[in-house]
Length: 542
Image (cartoon, rainbow, N blue to C red; front, side):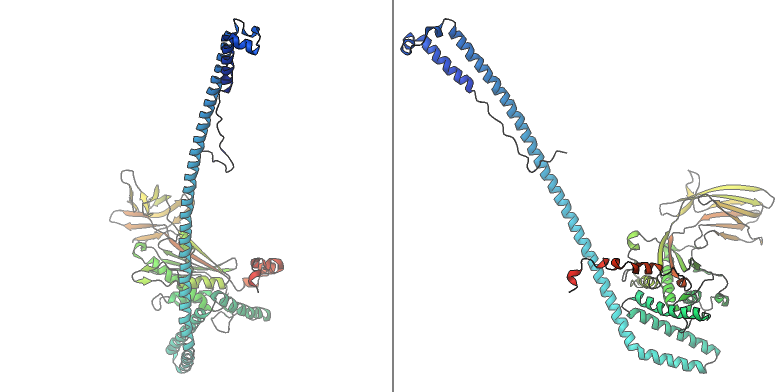
């Protein structure tokens, strides 16, 4: 790259070489030779004869020749200097032209960047304007419904309470469900008309927290059943209430409410695993709304045609860890890229743009606001397929033990397949046949070095075994099929690509810990730091 010319750098000028020494010498020699040729002139001017000795004219000519040679050398040097300076000037001109072209290129590049930045800012402004319009529109509708529905709500609640007093057992249960539904509707209207959902929920939690503190101080036992007079509720009951709306009637058995036992349930759509947990503060309908929206989102993507899998389920887990009630929900389907990950909880954003369904961008927004109001956390994790090597050790009824190595790889659609010989390529599964019944299987994944010891069922029928190490999304299946003279063992890697949402909410008991509010107390000690966010706004305070 040519060296750029500085602004104060100037081009030097070439100096012409004039032959004035030889011209002066030639003039003097001509006068001398003329005087030497005219004796009368010498006598007229009284010039001494010694100056015109016989050898002096030749010396004068030699002096003239020497002067001419010196001038010729000077002219040659000056010419070379002019040529060098001309070349330097030409180089500087080229550098100037190249610098000009580079500057023009930079100007064009920065101009493109500026245009792109302007377009990006305008797009974001339009998105925020659209979100604000949707939010205001939604709030206006909800406020109008709430305003006009207060009287209707009171009438319905009063009528249901009167009817419950005179109804039989079956009718009372139906009326109780109707009362719960009306209470849930009222909670939805409350949340939809508030200016800040998270702040509204946080304020309600502080009210329940005060009541919970009073219970602890007076030694009262916290109530475990949802009630408007109880500051706490059991998370499992709220989650079951949310799940029950997506199941057939009587799908959940009565033992689901046994809070001191771990509860398992599985059907064609769901895998539920609920461990015993502590209680949460606030209204149970907040958690119902959170779980319903997560389940709705999971079913939408998990039941798409491309995501269907014979072993795929919406896996919901509820447990307690480190003082937090954790609700984890996995669904099969496409992953969430980094750009969408930052938007999915924004009001009005939805990726459900299909012909039969147009998302309103409210479900995950409610989830985020409820978790924020609880001072909880939400994590979004993509579950991906991976290539793996499995070692299977098979024990037969006659005592023979066999070892097989199965390698899986991902095809162009990132679906796991069993690798065969180079000529055969890959296949959905690997099959083995044995003449003796299989009585034991050990399977080890090399990446985790965890071994599963499995005992097939001995009733003689078909046996299906799923990966017990990852029950929410099993990565492999083993199917044993009895045939006339042998048993067939089929190993199949399963497609588990999907998304897992994990919501962690602080339990009521954890909020009693001395260091729970420690961060807030420390922040209040820094009085100077409280105004740090408002620096530079003095001009707007008047």
